Image 1 (cartoon, rainbow, N blue to C red):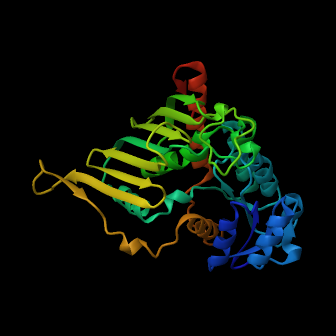
Image 2: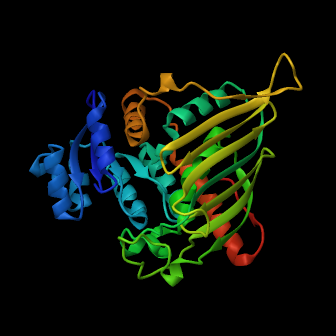
Length: 364
């Protein structure tokens, strides 16, 4: 392999941030792009200086190019498995947008294929790469919390049912609704801070109260034509290490107008924490513990995040880390196995909702 990762992006709607991430990293280049929409392909290709000969409408043609080491897969959920499998068979390393797949079985097939091909398969969880979450992860790694025995996580919107094309609200194409869309981000943050314990059981319920009635979509968007997924979901997870987690997510709910909040609360033996974001702009991160000098006195620590402001964020950070793993052998922070655990939990909530009881989760 060359000293720089030669990467390509398949799907340059969401994938534009992967494209710019590869271009911004000193250890990678974006050498090709692919999109089924020729207009977007030309516009993004011109904007980001991708040669016309390196723009493809067929991902199979892109994957046949020998000068590509790795690909980002940024397409609708139901296309993750076939494109990732084709990329691995073509000898490419793969960074896959979340969710890893639409089902646990598909995720397991993808992981097995990556192992058989001896290629890296990573899942893109961009919300980990924020100053407040960076700081909390450092505290977790330092043992500040002790055993984290409980956590709460959620992403709750008042009203914005997506209409990113008909596939987004169809279970056979999206894999689910808000839980597999927004919920997996909050779930991943909690699991990552808890060091990804193995789930053993899931209980939950999924609701579809607004989508089927064509309510709670943005005024500028048409109402979904087909809607057979949930617009709210809640679940409770037990882990093999004795910890538990509650999860909630909504695209739509009767609550404070125009609210869009996501959060994680941690409860550890030695300390707890709260990270909360409202409308993508208002951020709160606090840590709670007992004063070492006065053990009965609780204290609140609000960190100075200035030192983290210069760090890479979001998709740029994920892309750089992916390149670092391939080029320099760094240990993947978000291996495909993390995406699989998230799918196990979400799929468990769906099954629990259908059957009305607790669902056991098998180990990977």
